[in-house]
Length: 234
Image 1 (tube, helix red, strand yellow):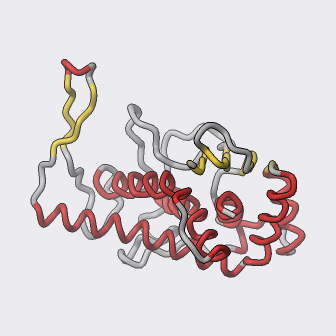
Image 2 (image 1 turned 180 degrees about the vertical axis):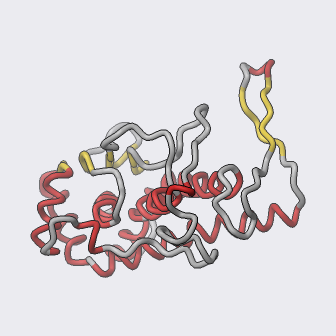
């Protein structure tokens, strides 16, 4: 159920990286894997792409809640990554209307610790509370969008779950063919509404400021924190 949720949300949302494969075969501490591979190398990411990444990250937890009516520890890594990505959007990339294009948390290099990067809090307690609220809102909105998408397409979620339980591994092309058959469209992403972000006026993908002007360049020293590979920990 968990991996089916990730895969279905990723396939339904527009502008996401294609699914390469989905497996529920355990590997190390991971119970399953949903892997996406970008078509082209990307150095910048627009805001709507990042918002979709958050929804995909929350797709596993949403599927658990819808199908199993419970929450499991399998979503721990997804929640951590969604939280970290949301915090970067707010604190590093200025993608929040309430706090504006300001970087919060001065980075310092610890030369005697192998040049590790640490963050120094250079803002007030009130700002810290506002940051936490905006991060919580981003993750919460992504979770609700994932719930809405999977509820709307519950029949496909159940079919995908059954297939994974039967064959254990499925590739992206097979998922797309299944969606085309069930949705009656050549582009499954066209059927899904883009995730709305109701805590900011213009945070909706496609709204003013969310297009080319919303592109950001992630810190090269750290991974973006997206979902090129989603693993469900044991």
